[in-house]
Amino acid sequence: MRNKIVAGNWKMNMSPARAVELINSLKDKINTTEVDVVVCPPFVCLPAVLEAVDGTAISVGAQNMHFEENGAYTGEVAPSMLVELGVKYVIIGHSERRQYFGETDETVNKKVLKAIEHNLLPIICVGESLAEREQGVTIDLVRLQTKIALKDVKAEDAKKVVIAYEPIWAIGTGRTATSEQAEEVCKAIRNVVAEIYGSEVADEVRIQYGGSVNAGNANELFNMGNIDGGLVGGASLKEEFASIVNY
Ligand code: PGA
Image (cartoon, rainbow, N blue to C red; front, side):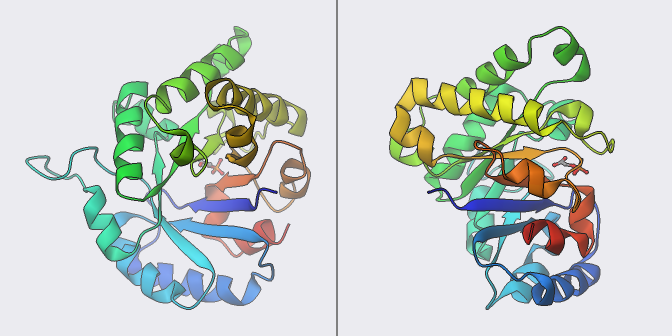
């Protein structure tokens, strides 16, 4: 049985001090131990957040990392730096990274391989734009994104990755995919994982839905057969995140 996983993607919000306040208020409100809880703050908040979650079941993820070990990459953060801090997860290939920072399926794959090499658990983001959905290519596109992201990933490592299906048209728009739309694509992702690795791996991989998840829709979404939790943006900056985790 797969454990549900709910991750908060804070994006470029909060500050180290405000982050600690939020963690402290979440700690008292999260009342389930059956869901893996992850918060992904901006890099500069990581040390404060790691200290604040100490002794709780909340894990910490980064929002990005570079695929090289170190070197002349001004402004970038290396995987070993995250590991040294105690970071466990890393979001890879979020649509905002693809859209504004030139990330491609190929760089996503390089980052996934590098994260695994460092024992960081990747949360790999895939998803279609509104135009792509209207053209009817959602499933083809998401299958392709998933296949390229997992290229050269070994079966034993593939089991540990998290894949987040995030339709771009649902991110930050208040327009959530219906549970049926989300389930259809999450199921297609599980099928492509099964084609590559077999059903045992596909049964273990956790697939999240992301895009305007809130306390009101989490329960229906997370109860779909192939949706193992969510990647939450806006609502993860508030105490509402605890209600989503407690769905
Ligand atoms: P949202 O963002 O919940 O604000 O739509 C989700 C995401 O981008 O991960």
